[in-house]
Length: 271
Image 1: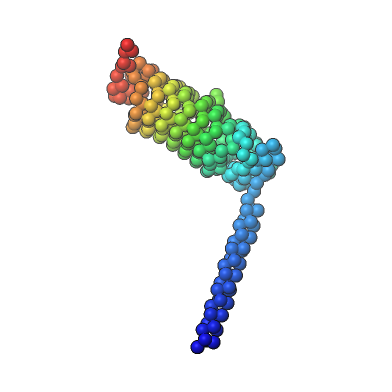
Image 2: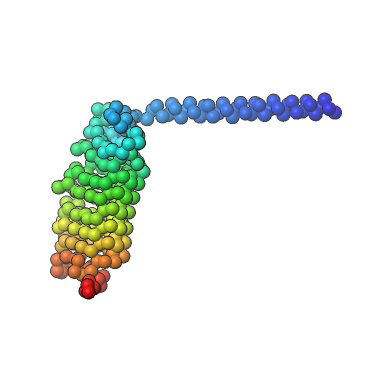
């Protein structure tokens, strides 16, 4: 009986060792495959002081989209190159710089036309941003949660569509001017930008989406043009310090009617 038990234990030990070896082999195989796949991802190291690496994918034979980024920890202004691997950089893909804490500013190349969904979401150190004239699309949640963003400028002639919730929760932003070349401010575009005090929407803008400026609780100065044909529901809901005296809108316009229906009332007289 003792010999039989010893034999069984020996067999179990051998089986256990074989299983462990097989599992280890599978892990090693997975690691090799991962490295091989990683090598197939196109990337370029700029070799500058921040050791920046841009990952990209070809759109066609002449253009690429940036898909990812790496750099050293020191915060710095990131200058996106005009070309990668000899091809023009025309787009930034979804989440390419998602929650990147290494950049406090961005310089866009003249070739870029599209900023994708959540491309810079959570980049909490970016303080200033200029959207170039050639940008045609700012994706959904593209700059959501850029909590240090104080200055947002749209270059002259910029006709970008501001996507849904594109600048939501940018809580350091105090003023914004939307040029008339921008036709659409999508739903929730500046939702809950808690420090936003002044909004100027210039003649030419046609659509202000639902909840576009909802819960901008510091908003006290608002300029709206006659060109606005649509203002979505709750676009300025929860703007608690916005009173009639702080709103400018052409008489008889859609904007004026919309504001009148909000019953904002008059600013309390200071004692």
